Length: 108
Image (cartoon, rainbow, N blue to C red; front, side):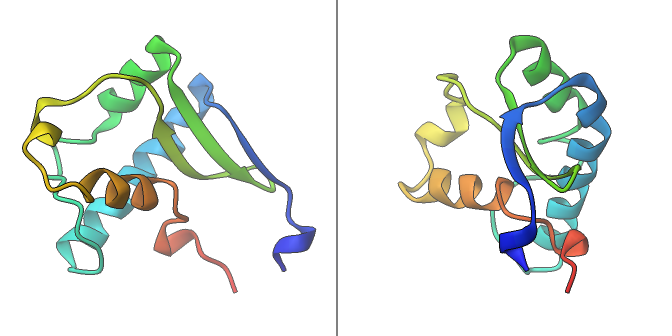
């Protein structure tokens, strides 16, 4: 039950990188399976170095529930040139996908 869970949105730390990388992998699996559609490509974006660079810039955030990192995202003013050509709702889809709990982490 979510009311008894401790959910925290916080700045990510170095020990979160492995969990963030696993979230990226889970999102890539979901994309490749047709469950979600973001437009990301495995081994291109996002990858572990994406999270590491964001941590260095101090703009990586983590969504934690009961001590487990379940979501992550970068919050900054950097505009990747690919988004300039994307449909208006692509950024909204990306934000929803990154900050949602990956499918394999969902517990009944």
